[in-house]
Image (cartoon, rainbow, N blue to C red; front, side, top):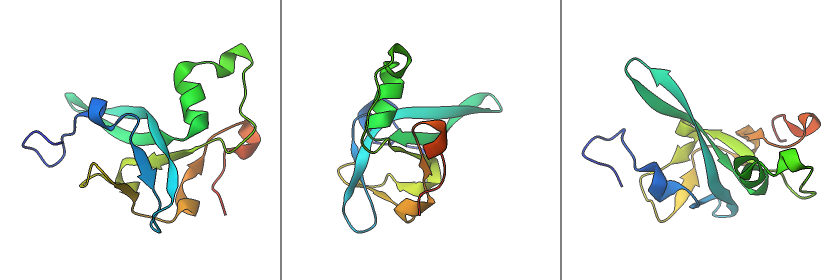
Length: 110
């Protein structure tokens, strides 16, 4: 998955991969990456997971389509262990992730 550098990853291979919590339960699929410029290059700072993240990526939320179930999560890059591409796992409790969804849901979970 990496290209010689421990910090480099092929994002196209990670998109759509399922992420599990520390107890092995599925949290959601990777739907979107957020990058920040660092010097002359960009680094991934966060990853959006779950159905709400998919709606955001496809921009259908702006068409009035909403999801009544769990909205999804935003994980910092360091909150996911990417070493085993076949089983991506959180490095923190699920409650430490930012919740995605309507403004009233955008808070840390409990």
